[in-house]
Amino acid sequence: MRFLMLIIHDDPTVSEADIADAPSHESWFEYAHARRAYDLGIRCDARDDARTVRVRAGHMQVSEGTVNDAAEWVAGVALIDADDMNDAVEIALRNPAASYGAIEIRPVHSFGGPLLDDPQRHPSPPE
Image (cartoon, helix red, strand yellow):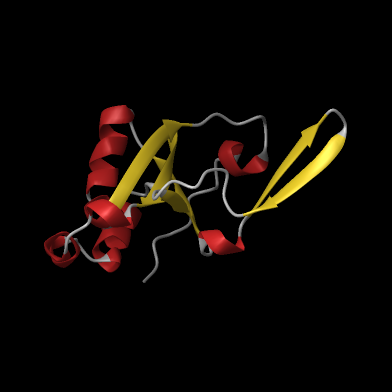
């Protein structure tokens, strides 16, 4: 099954100890690649660079910033392959963002696009 990990930046609840205790990004990538669980990752720019786009009653509305003004914001996403939700949680728990932010996990389903349906989508782990 494929899952989307929403990497949430969560400043107000993070302590220096949380940051110091976080595993390294390198160790998570090694773990995820060894399991052939890592499909794709995207890091987002700062929320100040975001634009929110809506169309209402046929009129385009563009506002600066993210959808909401909460302290938490999406800092990136990763697409992972896991056996089930419990396995996806185990993968997410090992990601450093779980120690200094939050990770929301959602099952995802393809609309027939090549990314999710391509059986060749797993490249060899980096050497």
